[in-house]
Image 1 (cartoon, rainbow, N blue to C red):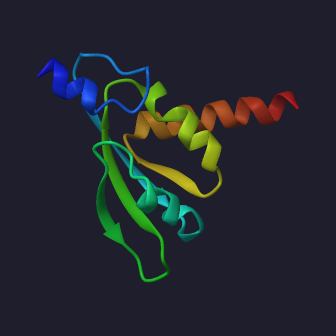
Image 2 (tube, rainbow, N blue to C red):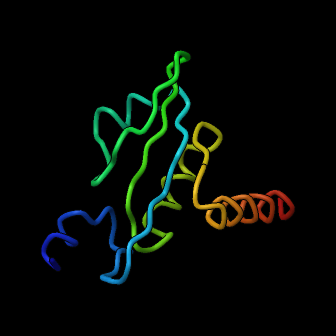
Length: 99
């Protein structure tokens, strides 16, 4: 099981503790990047007529996904879990207040 967890890690931030699911909304402008090189464990959970899509991935540490989210803002949104969406919003608001 440890070997499987290592194979499915998306970054060095993973740990062997319990995993959780993250649902992301991807705007059509970035969809191609997630189709061309999917994240490990990525599952497409929905596709919209406008070309956007929703994906789900399993991670064990928020830092496995946070850099990717910040890279693609404003074309990506955290749908679940809510605490992760709140964390992203708070970090972005804090940054904007500082500049």
